[in-house]
Length: 129
Length: 145
Figure 1: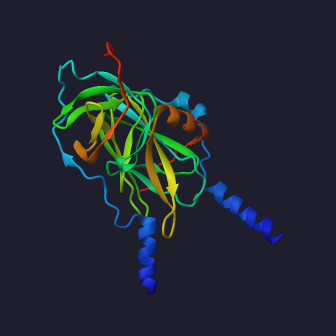
Figure 2: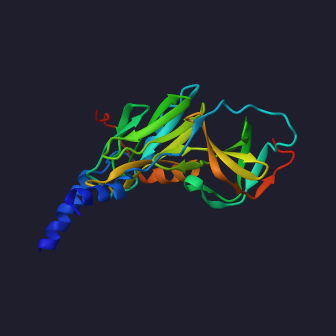
Figure 3: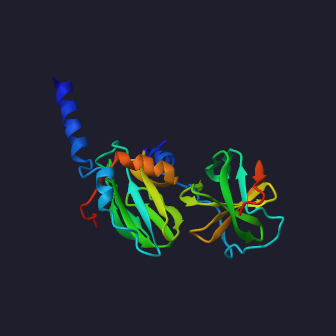
């Protein structure tokens, strides 16, 4: 193995060489829907090991901010949710019923659809707005 | 003796690279109110490791400060979308949004690099950021270009 190969391998290990970013595509901003099927405020039980290093802290509040074709978009209340690959992105959750189906990246105006939906333990706070 | 000299040199090197301004609590009374329609972004670095590495911090492509160990600074910007990056060998970007009147905290973490360490910006929860930043000192000098 040449010295150059070794250097490239070390670079790959330490520098994130070849690491790709969160896959995403542009989407129209979430549109508010008045359907009573969509809870306005929810809590979600802790969930770790979500795609792109997503970690949901236990029982934090999430507020509905609108919908995209893939589902309802929830933004954390007074907290931060991030997803990360090559770069780190603030993200909101896109839920279809109680399944996490995608991330909405507000700074990019993009959506990152998950390869496989993740089941979440969601509690609707009825009557809360 | 040699160990003592080495330790002294190391301590001097680390100390010379750290923030020396007022603490967050001492400085906060001098902060101006966030202008109407704008948000405030705090940048801070708690780690002293890799003290010699103090890259410029970019916000939407403009230099806004440096990642000084144990230091913090802030900027007020019109609400909107932001991207933070640091000028190190590996570019790690952070993207987030700021609402009018909102305060956000970006912690500048150190990560192992191939030749030198590099700074990784991370957005942290308000509560965590407000707590951690109290351990840091205000960096008031003009940012490096």
